[in-house]
Length: 119
Image (tube, rainbow, N blue to C red; front, side):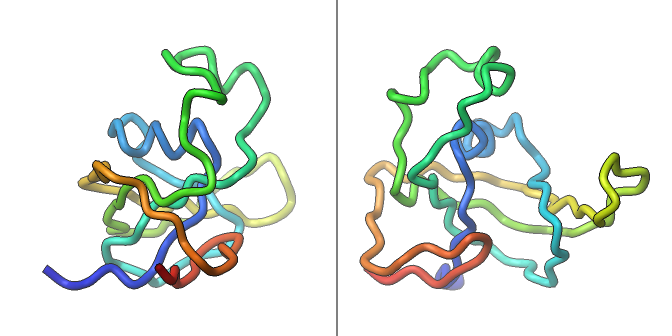
């Protein structure tokens, strides 16, 4: 298996939903050509809107933040038609999530989308 060299920053509860397999697309405003396994970095600040937490069995305080919590394969990227905003949106198709037993804490500053973590 190839070494994982990139990470994607995702806010909670979305990072947890990806690991559970219930979130199969990650939505962004920029497309990607990346088609490989990437680490999932759970951002320091979670989403606070209640609607994102209704179906979760854990609160924001119970989920890890500021750590790499697992990995997922990015297998595609499609442009979303009919977006509500004027800017383009893209869906990164995700597959085969894997949760890490021990979280990794990067020593470098995470990027807003893709970045190369150092340990």
